Image (cartoon, rainbow, N blue to C red):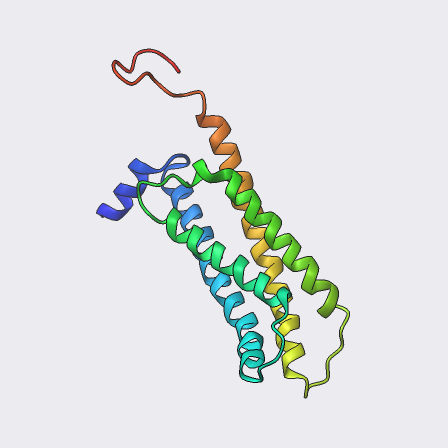
Length: 164
C-alpha cells in the first residue's frame, strides 16, 4: 500500500488519520469551489448572451472560486506542505466570508416562487458559500496550529545537530 505509506511518512502531523483528514477537507474544498463556479457562472453566461451588464458581484464569486481551485491543486502537489501557506488559507476564508455575506444579504431573506428557478438556485448557492467558508476556516486553523507547532523544530543545514 505505497500511497498510504507515502502519506504516513510525508505527513506533517497526525500520521495517516491526519493526512486523510486533510485530503478529505481539500477534496471537499475543490468540489464545492467547482460547484460555486458553476452556480454563479450560469448567470454570467446568461448576461453575456443577452449582451447585458456583468455584475461585479458574480465576477467576484468566480474569482474566489478559481483562487480556491488553484490553491487546492497547488496544495495537492506532494512536496508542497499546505501548512506553509496558512496565511493564504486565512485570506481565502475572509474572501469566502465576504462572498457569503454579499449574497446572503440578497438571497437569504428572499422567498422565491417555484417559477423563479434562478433565485432558488442562488439561494442554494449561498449555503454552498457558507460550507466553503467553514471548510477554509477549519483548514486555516489547522494549518496555523501545525505551523506554530513545527516552527521551532528546525535543524541546521549542514550537520543537523543545532536547533534553528
